[in-house]
Amino acid sequence: MAMAGLYRRVLPSPPAVEFSSDEGKKLLVEAIDGGTMEGFYKLISNFQTQSEPAYCGLASLAMVLNALEIDPKIKWKGPWRWFDETMLDCCEPLEKIKAEGISFGKVVCLAHCAGAEVQAFRTCETSLDQFRQIVQSCSASDGCHVVSSYHRGTFKQTGTGHFSPIGGYHVGRDMVLILDVARFKYPPHWVPLTLLWEGMDTTDQKTGQKRGFMMISRPQRERGLLHTFSCKNENWTSIAKYLVDDIPNLLKVEDIKDVKMLIGLICKSLPLDFEKFIHWVLGIQSAVDGGVCISKEEKGRPTIKDEVLKQAEVTGLHKNVLDILPSPELNCRNEGKLDTAIPPPQVMVGHLNSSNLPPAWSNILTVLLIALPPETWSGVKDRELLQEINRLTSVDDLPPLLQEEVLHLRRQLYLTKKCQQSKVDEDQSLARV
Image: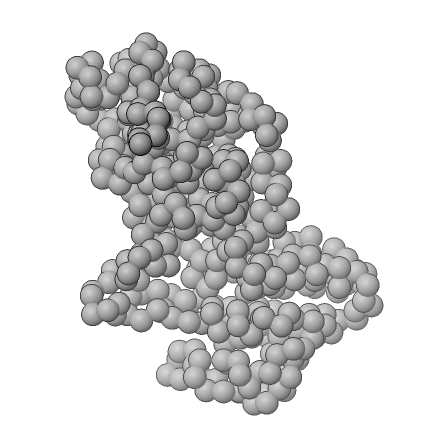
């Protein structure tokens, strides 16, 4: 016997105009002529329906990430790498999202972790005019897309909080095209931009924060060449906890006299899974994926990674890292490139047997230490030592490639901690991390 259920809803119109209606088609043609539908083509090519009633945030983000052609760096199915809702779980367990939905802050966190450039604004942090300018700018380009978080009740629709991408903008009518990812419920539709603003300018009762919008784009150069922390991976989250929480506490209780003593203390306290982390960082993807040609960008990734590590080697901090090790052979070279195959001498550093570690591990440790938040060192009691470590970990004079990688890693550490503490929705500065 067939079960009773719902097959779609009637779209309340007004205020919405259904995309496939005569008026909706007319709005589309006029917006195309006006040059504010350029982002539409990439989005419509990747338009998907959310697979669960509470997955609107995940579906919107997956759709935008695929439209921007950002490589997730992990397989979806078979040999294919592709963003899917089920892969977007590093900031919140899928079961929890399925039961409760996802907040604005967590979607922003997910977009950052996926490798996108994100500018996010709650309505209390911006204005209607700025929102209009951002929508018009993104609609005139296929390099950025806007995801809106709004309350459906503003459009006389059933339901409460919802996420969907904005597919285009009609300047003359001041209307936006919402590509509703709940296609089983409502079709894509045009709504007045001012009404969408009203829908965003509502409070999420679960977080007590205003809703808003985020502008998501592809970074000019792929970041996270060395490592991007994932909130769902216990190995990496333990490393993040050690770097962000344990090191500051360690420095507060120890009487440290000089930089070498400080670095030695950190090395002796490295967590058990740091060795796995080092090997993962240096794991370089093959230039051939199943015999299929890959992009020039992906082929060039190992070379750029090698350059980042080389730039770390010329920093003053790296010289101090090497000074606590018994042999310069730990940084062997092979024709000017980092040699990750030659095993260094037998040395024990904390829980690590460095005979199992590649030579470049000291370069990676250097990058990690520079990437730590400046306040990490505030617990150092000796004032001269504090000034010295602040100088050695300053990002101001780093080479551009290394500086960008360090700042990206610092951002990832910050987001990882906020996700672990479930504080991304309380932090108003998250949008500008």
